[in-house]
Length: 363
View 1 (cartoon, rainbow, N blue to C red):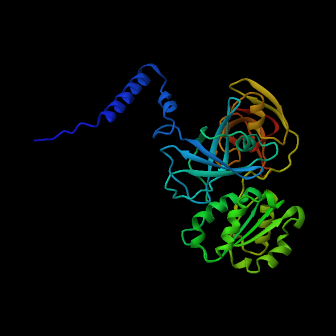
View 2: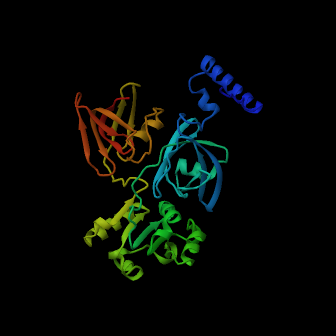
View 3: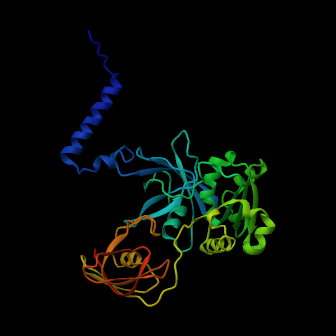
């Protein structure tokens, strides 16, 4: 004889409500309506709800997010793509994850600093509020520690470049026997995570040196590194910060024959100066715009009201790739030119490519 146990009345009522919602959604509403009603449920486009905003400095915040059910987790040091809607347009940027990977509440944090003329970073810092739904991508990136932890580590950071390193420190500080952090920021009030870094240093798990560049001057690797970190040649190095600092690191470690020890994370592509631009035509929309040679085609298109597919906006995710039907563009990171004639089947990344003459983009 089988025994059937009826669920409690409250559970039956709840199940009935969801069945009605399912029926209404299936009968009368568009297919994504249930995603609007339950935006964090499994199967919905990945999103997150802002749970809190914590000020780190006068222009930097940590955003605590409850990700949707399909969030796959992250490795400390990785980043995610975060999308926000501003004036009816969805913008995506990449931000480093700064939370512990094993938080029991399942929340994650990203930390960002408002940059001059930065539309999204300024919005996140100044206007984002708890309760807001944001769009998310899964964690990406290989700026992470190896499974076998190095015996000696040097973290070399500047400004908001501390963010992926803080993710590593919060998760792995106890696993690293010898850690040096050399961080640069204009003034003491600009040091993100200042109190936590000092606390880590006070416990002996970290040897911390902070340079306040407004008074101490910029870090000079050729002279400062031997003085501040005499054994730098023996250390595995993770560097993140302004482009000029990272260029100097790559040159310095390259000259020392130690390139294999250096791991670099760039937040934005290193753009080179370019020559004259040209007329850009978007074949499907029929829109034609004049573009200079120093701005990505993606930005030029958006200003003209042409919305192109995009993701990270820094040449990493390849979601902005479109066919170049004819003409010539310049890669803003390398200066390389790409030519196309009809039928060539050439595709380009519009977020890091600028017009280098007349060109046609298939969109």
